[in-house]
Amino acid sequence: MWSYDSVFYQISTLGFCGAPIENDGVLAHRIKKVEEWIPHMVKLGVDAIYFCPVFESDRHGYDTRDYTKLDVRLGTNEDFKEVCGKLHDNNIKVVLDGVFNHVGRGFFAFQDLLKNRENSPYKDWFTNVNFGWNNNYNDGLSYEGWEGHFELVELNLQNPAVVDYLLECVKFWIDTFHIDGLRLDVAYSLDHNFMRRLRQFTHDLNPDFVLIGEVLFGDYNLIVN
Image 1 (tube, one colour):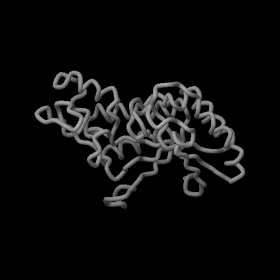
Image 2 (spheres, rainbow, N blue to C red):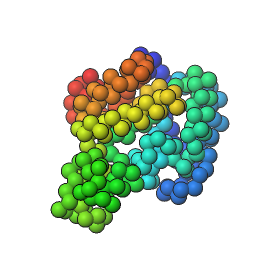
Image 3 (tube, helix red, strand yellow):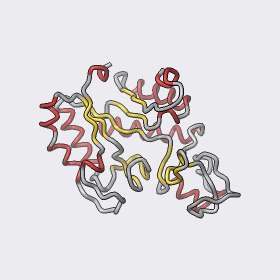
Image 4 (cartoon, rainbow, N blue to C red):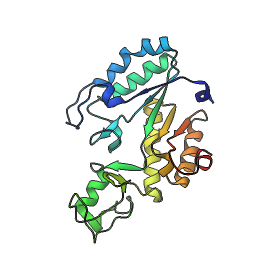
């Protein structure tokens, strides 16, 4: 596997590109800054870049709004496609942050849940939704937030519709940006069946596709295998 012998360069994308902390909705082509650093990376002997979250989010990137759209603070999908192309031209592979355990409150399905409540077709997309309780946002319902952070709404990865949606997004990234791998955010929190499905799905698309997991807790051998 190519990743075993590679030198990785990690970029905290929003901060590196000088994006505002809050998503101001203003389009700025900041992702192009990465291109200026390619000669430096080549000089260092970098083989792969790991980009912290790049997709549209409420604030810091791990609170995803839209898995199919580059964050407006960074630019457009075409901008990122060009950046990835130039990295590949310099033999630098691209690994994206795969944030699949949770989404931001601005995520389309969660917004539909807030609006339509029991009638939302997405009411089973999230973990432990309870219409008889309330939360600190005064939504008139409660749900599971990752480790108590309710701006990070936990996805129900045991719901086949959610898994199918996420896998289609991954295929879109591979087809559009030709990414070479994913770093799985909070892999220790992910449903094991989801990870098995993701592994098979990406392998079928590209046998050299790499998955790297963030494992802080749990059974390391079980998760990585």
